[in-house]
Image (cartoon, rainbow, N blue to C red; front, top):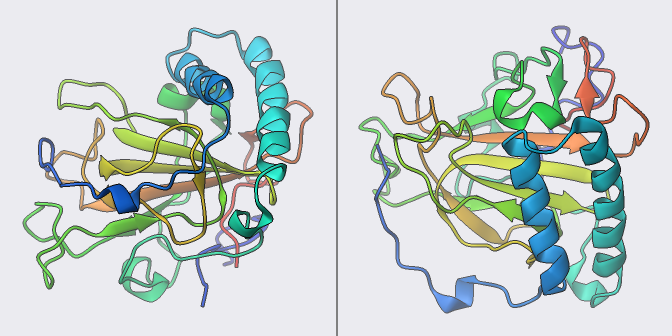
Length: 258
């Protein structure tokens, strides 16, 4: 904890290659609650524009402010039973922080002047890498010989996903998912997934299966990288510049909170 004295919180998680590997999806695993289609497309296209650097940063900042308000309004209009604000679920099914993170002193959290608007070219590593037991790097748990489900940490709305990735891609996050939790104002990024089980605009609850743990991404697929979930949570409450920009020692609120 002394390593990051200015972090707001240290693990939002204390609660309670594999490319080409296909997994059969059950219709029952895909939730049917969505925000409107137009807004879903808008959010996904926004993330792509930021990711690929095709949108000016100031324009993107203004667009994001508007987008999060629109998504929050849409989210608040749905059945309250699917909102479940304030509830948190550890995102690796069958694992715990003690098993996959350890004592939280060497989880790789490095703010390094991270800027949301440099998504695929950002500096630092303001996230937790949460590891699974996968000695032979086949994306299957060593004990169960089964894929490890990635669960939604909170309730929220899926802003964007990347379903396609191969080893020639330069995408650092591989098959990723961005989820916005309007109740807590968190932007949550799940990266290096194998198979995705959600779509842009989809409403998720804490504990919903959203993906399986994988090895997709520019560096994550290489043999030197153990199989893991890359989890980043950004506090989007600060809407003034430098919005979503973390300067050492991290006062601008990247997570991870208990």
